[in-house]
Structure formats: C-alpha cells, structure tokens
Amino acid sequence: AQSVTQLGSHVSVSEGALVLLRCNYSSSVPPYLFWYVQYPNQGLQLLLKYTSAATLVKGINGFEAEFKKSETSFHLTKPSAHMSDAAEYFCAVTTFSGGYNKLIFGAGTRLAVHP
Amino acid sequence: EAGVTQFPSHSVIEKGQTVTLRCDPISGHDNLYWYRRVMGKEIKFLLHFVKESKQDESGMPNNRFLAERTGGTYSTLKVQPAELEDSGVYFCASSQGGSNEQFFGPGTRLTVL
Image 1 (cartoon, rainbow over the protein chains, first blue to last red):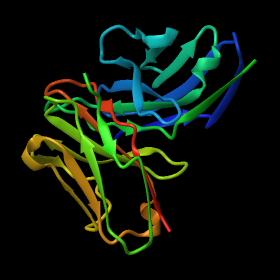
Image 2 (image 1 turned 90 degrees about the vertical axis):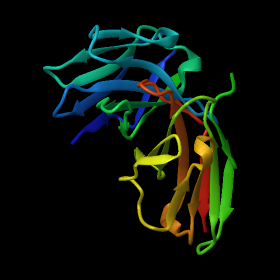
Image 3 (image 1 turned 30 degrees about the vertical axis):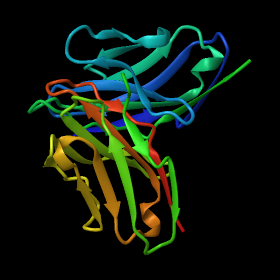
C-alpha cells in the first residue's frame, strides 16, 4: 500500500524567503511522485513530477523537488517566495501500471506568504 | 484547449435529497477520475473510467454513490440519498491514455445540511 505524509498543515514565510514543504511517502514499489498546487477557486495544477528519471525535478514557477529514496522524501522547495505562491500544496504518490495511475494524496500544506 | 469542467461549482442540499455532479473531461482523454476531499482531510480517490468502462471503483464509499460515463465522454456522479458525511469537494480529473499526468477540474463543493 502507498501513503503520503505532509509535515505541517500550515507554513508561513516572508516574501523572498526560502519555501520548504515536506513530503514523505511510503511505497512497496518504485513510486511516481507529484506536487500539485491549488489556488483559491481553482482546480489542482501540476507543479512537477518524478517518474524515475532525474532525482532533482524542476517545475513551474521556480519550484523544484528532490527525490531521496533513502529518506523516502520528496520535499518541495523554492529559493525565494513570492506573494503569488500563497496557495495549498499537495504531494501525491502513485504507481503507473496498466496505463493509468490512481493518485494517493497527502493532507495538503497551506502556504502563506507575508510581506 | 478547454480544461476539465465541473458543474455545479457549489451545491447545497438537505440530507436525504439527491444530487448529481457532472464532469466534462478534456476532449480526447480516455481516462477520467473522481476524487473527493472531506474538509480538512486528504483528497481521496473514488473511481476511474477508461472510456465508458469503470476500471477501478475501489474508492467509492458505499452504494449511495453511482457514477456513469455515457458514451465515454462526460461523467456524472450521483449521490442518493445524500448524508451529512458526504459533504466535501468533489474533483474530477482526466488524462490521455498512457499518460501519468492528470488534469483536474475546479471541483464541486457539496454541502449536505
């Protein structure tokens, strides 16, 4: 069985500060990992994904994440927070078998960015 | 290209009533997924269609929930009769066959009073 744990339901940073959102996963098979972002009144948007290629994955809006198998982690980072980054972020894990994937999500982390 | 759309955006009903949610996937996407987020908890998988066929409905909570995908295009999710614990946000997502990237709709917020 697969699972995801996101540490911290709320994270607050200053504009220009480092953003670090933590995600740990559990999977008995090599996982595919995703970060999604949800802005107010919008659907989930894919930020980035790990699919067994490079362990450091770059996504949209300056975000990146590093897959660390030894730590079963896939933390999301951004060097400098912007006010527009305020949103809710979801980490998800899946196996991609049979040509489709059922996403298993973490509980989400709401990021607040203050001036 | 139009994204995944869902209707209605909000629905408020009383316990015991029936509600039908609709999802229109991106044109050409064979895979359609339904997920639900109960307040404060994680987003959970409900079921998956490939074209008009249910591929995996392991996440459906109980038999009060019925999903259909007529002709392999749009999908509906009916809750009958609704209970208080059905309140939450229902997301629909779609993907192309063989792709691991799912595109999500904005969700339908269901409130059962």
